[in-house]
Image 1 (cartoon, rainbow, N blue to C red):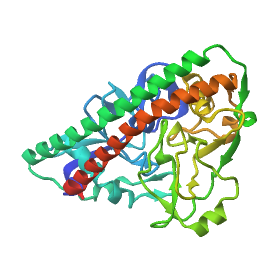
Image 2 (image 1 turned 90 degrees about the vertical axis):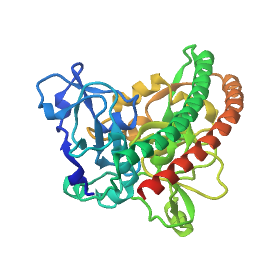
Image 3 (image 1 turned 180 degrees about the vertical axis):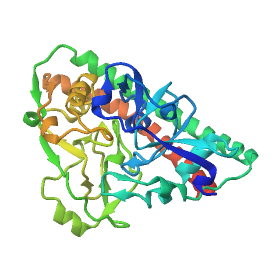
Length: 368
């Protein structure tokens, strides 16, 4: 069935920065869908009830970066008001909302293929989304499909929780070792900053790995989705420096602030736009990775960020931000601790990837 025969798509309100308030009702923006820890902006004033969002409602983000911003979400963070570029999905027929969420996300490739805009920010119109075909089965079959997919998602969430706990262990060790108020210096003084912001090179079906912001998670690089550029393209575009294993990468937009070290690659690879590479000989990379992921550093770059739809920071502002510089011997001790924890993380990460493959195959079976 076509989307328009299944549900009504109610767009959010175009809140401007001038509408933001330090208190009031939370404004539900795309960043709040992609990241449950993302801070809210607030609105203190009157609003139309059609823009109100409550727990359990189905939302669809129709603008942003394909692969990270587009998609269907169940809202679970209390009452809010819906920002523009997000549809509230209101069923017109008797349908399981969780099934509908999976069905939308199972058809994201078809949806994204209709998107307009540049390489970075794109959008799909309501008219085009209304015409997307979504498989609707009996309610009994919907409930069964939802049960299967939720069980796999639960396993996936448990694996993610294991990784998060290991990261928390490292962060706790970081605070324990470096909470003594060491003198600070700017990133531009401490690092060689490589920025390939600009035109995205042509992608090919196979070749050298093309790492985008979609692949950079917090303290890990996820190789899905896999994208590639040719060797000829690589030789032409790699003119600003060569990111290498162990360098720290930081996403400057969509999403803002994800950070990890570059893992081992058997081939050359390309780091795309909306990512800066921080190369350093003045710091131990493991220390640098966690120094730019602290709450204190986050407050610094959030204060310099901009963007009403997708929040980002300019590199010239990021490079002026400062981090503490503790003695190198302490950094080496921290690196040794991180290496031990990383061994456990590798085991969990492998299990996580296997669970993802299972989930993807089931989504293909039900909605492909």
